[in-house]
Image 1 (tube, rainbow, N blue to C red):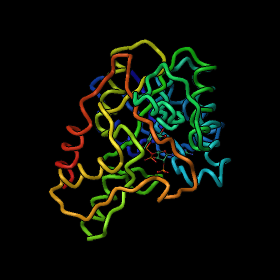
Image 2: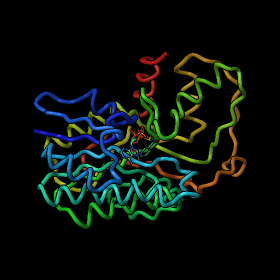
Image 3: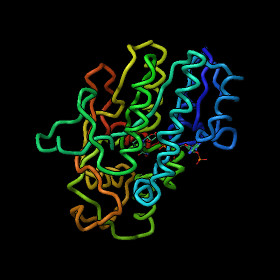
Length: 283
Ligand SMILES: NC(=O)c1ccc[n+]([C@@H]2O[C@H](COP(=O)([O-])OP(=O)(O)OC[C@H]3O[C@@H](n4cnc5c(N)ncnc54)[C@H](OP(=O)(O)O)[C@@H]3O)[C@@H](O)[C@H]2O)c1
């Protein structure tokens, strides 16, 4: 199977490269080779590669900055996706598109249940709206697609668009002896990018039914609890204090509750187990 991977150097993209299964002929593409916002270039390059499947791990991921430059977020997360969709329509390639828990508004927190693939998105910030626009383009133009929503990603490479990830930030601050203040009223499903990459390959190779999948490690926690487990697994002592999100004003509103779970049979191991493995790998 010939697969073109866009965003190959990103946090998730690099794990997809690392975990490439046997029998997959992978064409890892970075932004310098093809900018997804450039429709002509996307068409020319992918028409040459002629992949059976296009895997889109590109994204504009700066959640706060997106509020001030929505056109940049939409250029990558919606127009860029349309450019890939157009290639799929022309060549018959399957599209795997990565999306986010931020397509949800967090209101499901009132009943304390994670969002499943059956819940209705209602994004509350520009990043989430642009990602949802990308999903709609895929869903409304293609029949042969996978939309894979991930959340709270951390991996060896760190998010290139955000300059790291939460795990690295907590470790760096703790080692520098900085006191930590972390929100304890915002909840997420922390997800190891390596686990997510393996599950994405499994979905593709098992030829699962097309549609939307939630690919996160099992369970959920507040960002405060996430930080506490990072310190514990790394064997670090630090001064850490739980705070409310209102004490940490950010440019973009964020859903206070965005844990995901799958009702489509792609559940993964618990988040604590995955985090322990990741920390063992990096410290
Ligand atoms: N990180 C999270 O916590 C999180 C949570 C939920 C969902 N997600 C989703 O997971 C996916 C992967 O995120 P990630 O953490 O791996 O982000 P990332 O590390 O920032 O990777 C995104 C990649 O997209 C590339 N890219 C950006 N704009 C591009 C363009 N115009 N043309 C071509 N390539 C472009 C970037 O290249 P450069 O490095 O050259 O800029 C980067 O390699 C995204 O769909 C994101 O929305 C992430």
